[in-house]
Image (cartoon, rainbow, N blue to C red):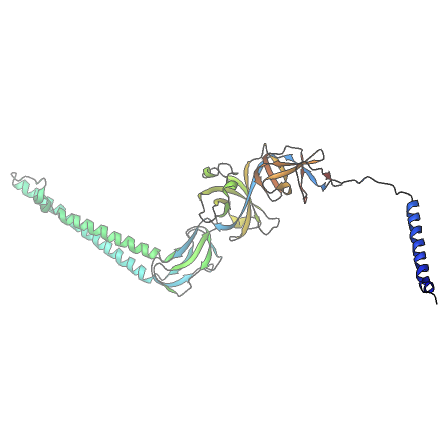
Length: 388
């Protein structure tokens, strides 16, 4: 076999490959040119909201717990055994001013009153006798003068004092006053066996029971007033400045406020901001203002002591300010404004912020479109378009 015969299959394959390559080149060169399209660059899509001119009063909000305006620890002023308690002497029991809650056994104190009254009566008799003896001494002296006209009536000094028994009269009068003081003291101690409600209120914590022997100073119950409740709200200094003349509140001047459950719900109660505590808390650097509501348990529905509530207080007038959605305010107090298809970054002055609104004093005008959506990349003057 010749050498050519051995290369023949290879040459045939190479020829076929060459023919294929040439055909592919011819087909590519003869195909029609595809139409060219201009590439369109789309501007980012944004959502906008109009800035509007605000009006009416600003609302300053905070939270706090409902507490009584007065709370006292009722304690025993005298010692003894408790021999009577009111059926309403329980946690939550209500009393009117002057009603008796507890009575301590009065036996010893009533006996002390009887003895003091008897002593007072005896001292009154002694004083009456001393005055009568003084009168008798004067009459005796007058009879002596009638028999001897040379005797002169003592006008003073030790002779006159002793002659008419004036020291004895003064001692008797002093004994009457001392006996009366002991009687008053015994009556007061007897009265103190009755533990009475100092004002209209309710028992917070009962700490004594029938039959218990108590000593002076022992706390019998914790008692709070139900005539009014207060809510202490902590505000940052910037928030407190939004309330009109907060440091001059008091007397007849107060600010309207509305209380609502912090957990939500449709209930609300009208209250008044009556004062501020005047100094910043050293730990939180906040100022506490006090909102008060009268007769909280008589409201519809009742406002329970210890409830945690939100407080919306009426602040300064919003005239001359601009309102925008909360989402439109960016970090660093800037706002993005859409102006003729471009984005403008504005620095703004913020007067106040609420949960859904922000109030500005400068930087944005009424009617301008502020951007409320987010963009990944933002530069001054980039093109933007409104989402349809």
